[in-house]
Image 1 (cartoon, rainbow, N blue to C red):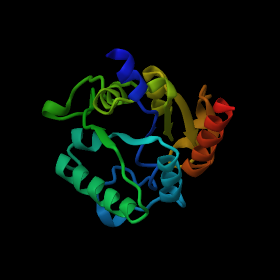
Image 2 (cartoon, rainbow, N blue to C red):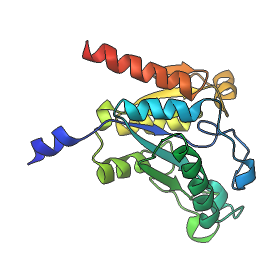
Image 3 (cartoon, rainbow, N blue to C red):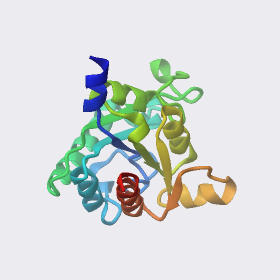
Length: 198
């Protein structure tokens, strides 16, 4: 039975949201400020067509800090899904961490396993969606994204959008690749998959 389930498991591309899918706005929650980074919807369609599940994993400490609510996060995510649907892209899962270990208020002040760079959100998605983590990738603009991906057993790619370029100035990134943006990272994933099969 376990072997059959293994055969059915799929690879995924996990993605940070702010600074990776859309432009970084610092604690974004207003729909009118949401804007895709150029060519991201088309890149996600390419990954989807190649057989990857698409999963968004996003730290949202603005909830913990009291800047906005979980309902605000959900409203913005629904807007993103509606916009992506216009490009025939369907996101398979969205996971958020609303906690912060020191700056959180009330129930959201928590040293949790879901906050990246820990792998909790990726592991939960793998269980929910039957994802093969070792055939999967993580794309993000922070070292915490890279750490979460590696901790879950994925290959991790850093993009220079969002905070990515600034992070590279201050800290070395020991990742599986560094790219200008998500579309370039997606091209690399598709090429690597083709090379793995040849």
